[in-house]
Amino acid sequence: MRVPGIPDEEFIREEKIPMTKEEIRVLALSKARLFYGAKFLDVGSGTGSVSVEAGLIVGEKGKVYAVERDPQAVELTRKNVEKFSLRNVEIIEGEAPEVLNKINDELDSAFIGGTERLEEIIPVVSEKIRRGGMIVLDAILIESAVKALHTLSELGYKAEVIEVIVAKGMKTSKGYAMISRNPIFIIYGEKK
Image 1 (cartoon, rainbow, N blue to C red):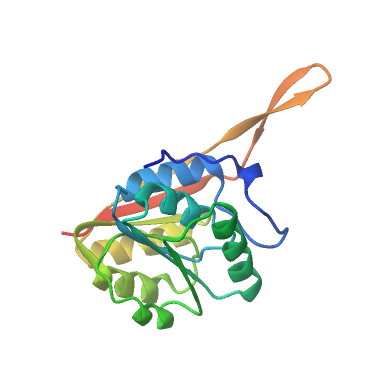
Image 2 (cartoon, one colour):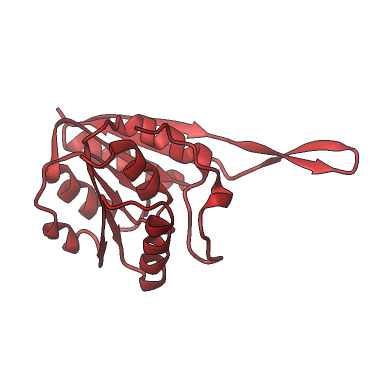
């Protein structure tokens, strides 16, 4: 098992494809309560950074499903999975929640990185999560965080939210300046 925290620079990137940044990945995967042998779902895999980190944590006995609708992002996820030599990540191309029926495993946790159609996606993901399993989402918009909290609560989850504001040091000619990134909401809940 490996602890999350792969530097962003180690991932293959493309400008228009979103990536969950290192510090947010670490917190989100912590809230997902991953363990060796776990089965994990990443909806909206983007670059594949969450899928890769999860794949390393769950190990060869575990399984990661990376769902992505954008063909360019699917290819980028594939490249990053190959770069990190992971054989436990299955990439599913298509629109969630429709393609989630391709997953027959009971899941230990899931991460939802996209914020469209949350009210449709969360219930379908919830059906696949075992009792005691976790659903974790991230969002930039307050409205998306509220939708996620409301939907999880309606499904009987004990839903919680944290707001994370990260500033990274940037070297200047006179020293280091802290450059803030966008605040991110991490919403999570345990299935009862």
